[in-house]
Image (cartoon, rainbow, N blue to C red; front, side, top):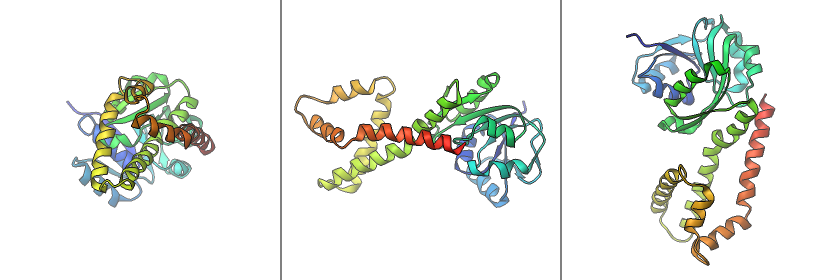
Length: 255
């Protein structure tokens, strides 16, 4: 049985991460300006792909995953011909209306994968044409978990949380490691302990509320209570809340 084809416009890291999840399910076509990038893409994917130049590309009757920089949407749209069946965009802060103005499509869906896609553990949020909910969910389930949201506002908030979240967690991971080094732990040992911490916590948080996990660790007048107090005093909680607000507002500006 012949596999259905799916087309990526853009050959960057996100396109590659999604293609890794889809290569056994779909025939992959990748469209880009630089054909040498497509050769590298194919080699790293270890799967034969259809390599197509961007200029004048006809999107008619295709299912497109749009993986370009948000500020390139107008330029990209001018180089495309025809009208695709479905457009799945991964562009942060790029509204359904803006996509509709620049690329002709029968149906448009916005998605927001995150860095976890590179290891098959993305948390992807989705909104748009609800008639494509099942299909687009199947596509992005190949790189992790998905959640359909009912509005673009919710997707923009989710972008601030899950899309930008890996950067916030990376900052915390680095800072905790630096703290252990400051107290005398070797850097390599501190890194290994931090990675084990995050791996275990990632599993625990799937089934427990954060407050319950915190209470389970924090004994009266213990080491955790003293350390936790310093985090609260330093405004870590309010800093995280403000980070979500700032990232969400920036997503709105990008529209």
